Amino acid sequence: MRRDYFTLEAAGVQTDDSGRPTVRITYEGPTEELESRLRRGGTPLDGDGVDITYRLQNALDADNPKGVFAIADRVTGEYVLELNADAETVFSVIETVADGDEKNGHYRLVIETDDGSELAVYEKSTLLVYDHGGDLLRERSLIPSGVEI
Image (cartoon, rainbow, N blue to C red; front, side, top):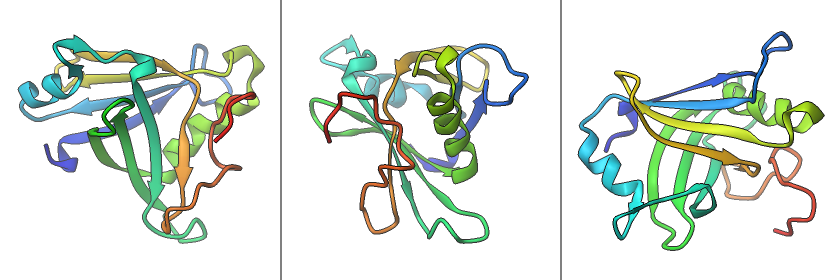
């Protein structure tokens, strides 16, 4: 699966938006491989079975910081998918969740096909952000209280 088969959008991050902040990933390629990656041993991966990360490809102070948004199988460590995404979009979700008590500290991650069919929906409270050198940016990450990393 190529990264350019995916697009990432954020919803629920504007002050006048209602509902939970949502990361919506739309896949525009052949679905068989992605559907296979969203399963382990024939069982669909659930929200506790995936880890979500964002790795910057350039410095945050660059004119237009970009990075790679990734979903990995928590047990095997294998990437389910990776896609290129603007930092502004990812950070808008993180900031909305971190600043909003009414959002319950969670965001929704939706993976869908380009015809709108949902392949997976996860409720998540963690999104780890790494700089372009691979160091965790705790102040930019979404880490629930009580979680030690």
